[in-house]
Length: 234
Image (cartoon, rainbow, N blue to C red; front, side):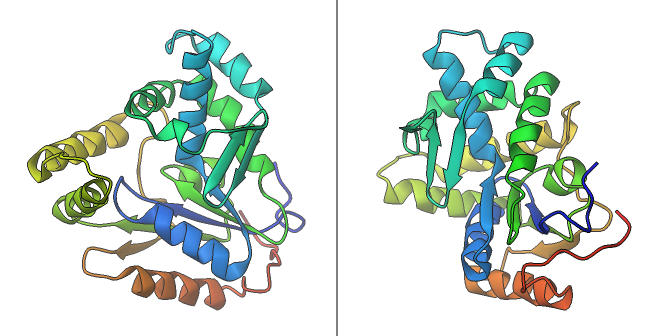
């Protein structure tokens, strides 16, 4: 177990798809000058690497072994695997489907946990995902759970896709997000849930700037802006 008195501090930001956690995590990391962990991108990386190698996405043992051997570098807005920039490639639809498949495998999640925890370096880490505060960083100094109505999350996603020229309907996105919520909350391994000690923020009617300000208020209240971890029970 990590010694909290020595480890760099972690702010875990969890929430369902479309709740804004990726955007908020990136903004907070930038404001604090901390490292950013986009955990969802890591599962996309595994799917991308597996498909590129012609591997089956249900071969848990082989996938875990491959995952452990990958050299993954993640920076705000960019991710590299074994020196190759895959930032755009991992956003393809077939990779999205593959990522959902490998994320259900305990062996892959365990292999990636080492990668995720290895990113906990000074001055601190902003960890964005669905199980950051409940599983990966249970001792995080601050846990935030972002949420928003399904309608608002579908609207946000629809706007993003429209800007990229996609013709996906709002109705289809609404149904897709509902299905994703159901899957995430009921999966056997690391289901989406709010940690008991997490601070909930409903972003439905909030601007990005307002949510960032709210998170930073809690960051300051815990004395984390200096980038130093505090001891205590975890």
